Image (tube, rainbow, N blue to C red):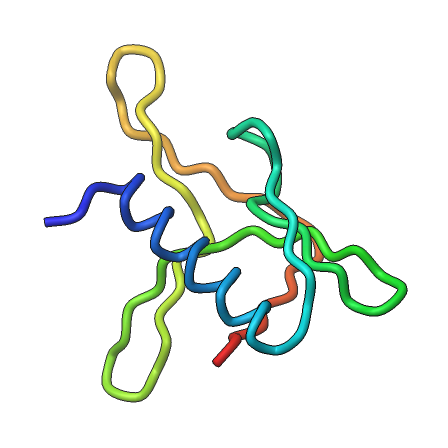
Length: 91
């Protein structure tokens, strides 16, 4: 069974590989824990990209758009982020 970190590493590598195959330059942050995993240079724009691990349910991609973490006292807490979300799937 893969850990959460391993799944994240696989997702980031897959997105970076797909972007490079499509002709984009890809840049990685020096530290972890930021609000994005990669930067893709797309023409005149720099796109901040956060990669997510997604599962398949038949032909449907199932993506969790929230995170669950342990809060004080080891109680689970859901964290959601409001705002504009753009989701694109790279081949």
